[in-house]
Image (cartoon, rainbow, N blue to C red; front, side, top):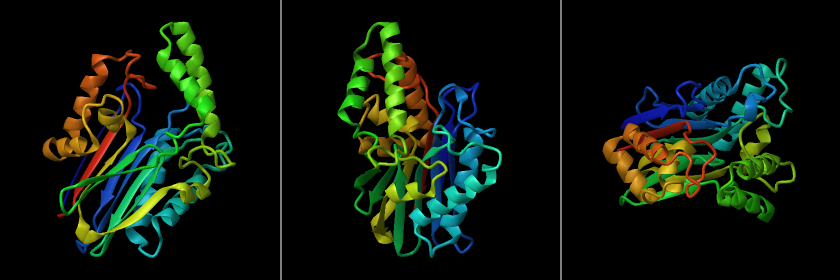
Amino acid sequence: MRIEMATEPGDPQRPNEDYASATVPASGFGGALVVLDGVTPPQGDDGCVHGVPWFVARLGGALLELSGSRQDMTLSTCLSSAIRRTAATHRETCDLSHPRTPQATVVVARWDELHMEHLVLSDSALLIENAHGEVDTVLDRKLSQLPPHVRALRDRVRASTEPEDRATARAAYVRAVEALRNAPDGTGFYTAAADPDVAAHAVTGSTPRAQVRTLLALTDGATRWTETFHLGTWPDLFALTQKEGPHSLISRVRTAESAGPTSTSLPRGKPHDDATALLADLT
């Protein structure tokens, strides 16, 4: 078994808000991996005295510990318990009802001799190479299925060529997306914040262990290679990372970002984003 990971902040002057970790039991059978992407609040206003890096470290550590040690719990239950545990550590000092309270996207996978289980919440991704070398991509598509009025705002941002109009449209789009995040009526998308019930909205599944060769977990800063810059398909991204390693994937993303940081043809929320890739070869 080989586990290799790389993570890099989008801005070296700011803390990295991604998290990646993996564990292999002392017995040598099975293991688990966790990758989180913290959500950066506008202007740093999130009602929390600790901040997003603290939150993802706490949530990620709790989720890895539960996923690796509690085989009797589903991954959804592990995530729910990790959210509840993390919320309890700062409920007395922070406003967890704040709409921008620290939160994160989630990828977690767990395997033993018989099965590989996975969970994906929001816009991080998990790529699974099967025994025949084929690559399946697990995505939570709720964020990409925005209501028509939100898509119209997004398209206005992309089409705008005037800085002032673009800034106005972008502010309206951000507000519209924020209104959909963890919306109680179920019309939006979900991230792991302070409500343990969001775990029920994650994409989950199980695959016979014999049918899984390799796992690749990615935050959306790394998936830009495919989703934003269209440099190759998901199988192409997997092949690149498997051959050259996670560091090379992130380096190629940075090159693409720097080639056109203000391009309207390749719109993105930030010129550079925190990027993380974790590759687990289970053979």
